[in-house]
Length: 337
Image (cartoon, rainbow, N blue to C red):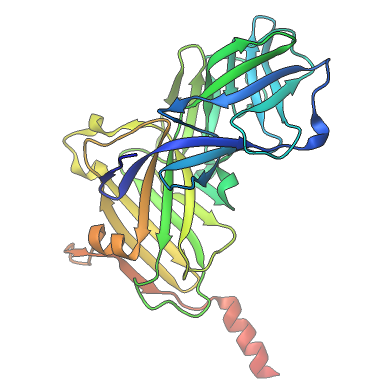
């Protein structure tokens, strides 16, 4: 697959694969079964939890355990179908069941939102309080909004549903080795991103009838803080997957500042800050993945910041952090002993 590098972004197709689920939740005859799969991009299709494909040309997504799909029909509104499968396997479809459905759905979406009643305005909040707690690839689940683009009656209380992505995906590759002298045991703590054109968090509505995701009005564009819960080693390359709403950046033509992104990386020992620009003709499209390399090489080649006199400095601003107060307290206790 051909790739096209755009400033700090490398556009890739997303791909889809397997589903896994507990063996003790197989549907019996009283259940209505929905077999969910993903629409394809060329020869590739997409899913919920990402992992690398073997050839490195696509992002493979997987359904996670206990996920839920919302469905609407003439006889029911926002009925929840629950993920179920017989064995752990790598397949392109997963079964979801409901013991209340009496007909195939006319509309389906993911993830299920409890209490939603209007199929033209399913409410979603992307990263409440502008915070994204990232544990691993499964953190994407719950923010990767999808909508059914094909529902087929299979008979015998079952149907097949093909989903497509309403979100794009950022694959953020962090690599600080070579940027500065790392401290012994240094770990990644958090990453903050801000796009001047639009917020990376916020409230949305999903219209199942008109197949449209709409961002609601907002008052403030604040940085999105990604908390790296596992605090991985700063010596190793680390990848964060993050859903992002589609955006036509060409709508902002004429204001170069709107193509500027701000990046802040905090470790246990250092703070790294820099700006980077993307091309004005870049559109962030649903169902596509954009690579964001936050490596030492990329920061030095593409990054910049301003000094106190507003002079532009190429590269990244790096500040050594003071030891945590708790560390000082522990050291003092040891001296007293």
